[in-house]
Image 1 (tube, rainbow, N blue to C red):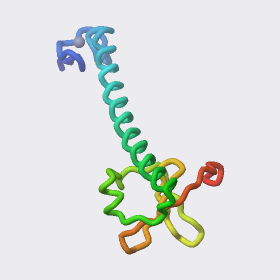
Image 2 (image 1 turned 90 degrees about the vertical axis):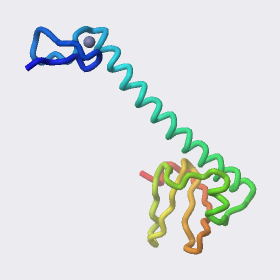
Image 3 (image 1 turned 30 degrees about the vertical axis):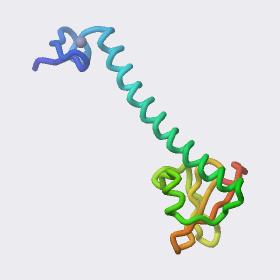
Image 4 (image 1 turned 180 degrees about the vertical axis):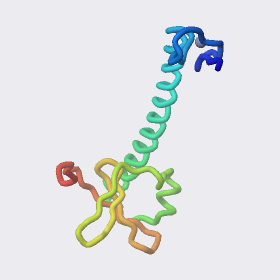
Length: 121
Ligand SMILES: [Zn+2]
């Protein structure tokens, strides 16, 4: 069976386990893969930073109870958070770094700050 270079698509000669026709093509291919990964990570990190900024600003203004629509209007993205903490009474907190919130069941959320990383171990 004819094998094609994963990067340029030309026919590969030589060993049957070769995936690329040249070192250049292997490097191109791996660089492209890394670039996509880096872009994805950068975008997700950007969303998390934005979420954290929004929560931090509210927290500093001592607005600890906020309607979800208000957060949404500020550009908060509820799909992205860094971790989930469940307290002993079963309450779940979604965290963006050291700022977390719980849903109070009436479309409001209650903010919390916890920078004691070791408690999560
Ligand atoms: Zn090639």
